[in-house]
Image 1 (cartoon, rainbow, N blue to C red):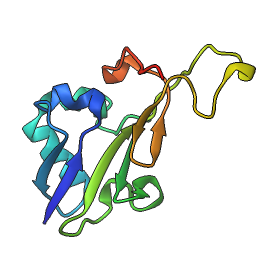
Image 2: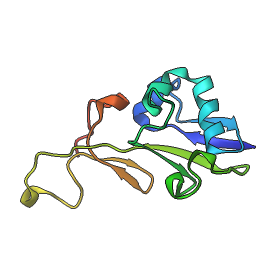
Image 3: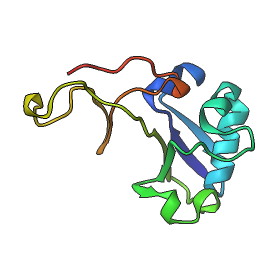
Amino acid sequence: MAVKVMIPTPLRSYAGKRDHVDVAAKTVGEALSSLIAQHGDLRRHLYQDDGRLRSFVNVYVNDDDIRYLQKEATPLRDGDTVSIVPSIAGGSNHRHSERTEEPAFCVKDGRKQIHGANPALGMTDAVER
């Protein structure tokens, strides 16, 4: 089954600067394995040494978090979109009273917001609003 794996901006340099990769897969695990087979440099950013997904890597099928489905065994259908969304710790050093509606450091990915920077993901700079 053909599915689209969305690559977050900070990881695109490890995926040939592509914003997505089309793969044939029946499960999320197969989709991620196919992605890694095509772009091996992504492995260290997505997986721990023991082969488990890193705790700060969130994966969605369409809009559903796989942690609440069948994790990497979550089945895929033709045309599904798998999104990799890294969790990012940190934030601005603004005091609460100085904040606007959105935090000072923000990267938007569709409806999901990611805050701060994470060097383990190759993200050393945040986008300042």
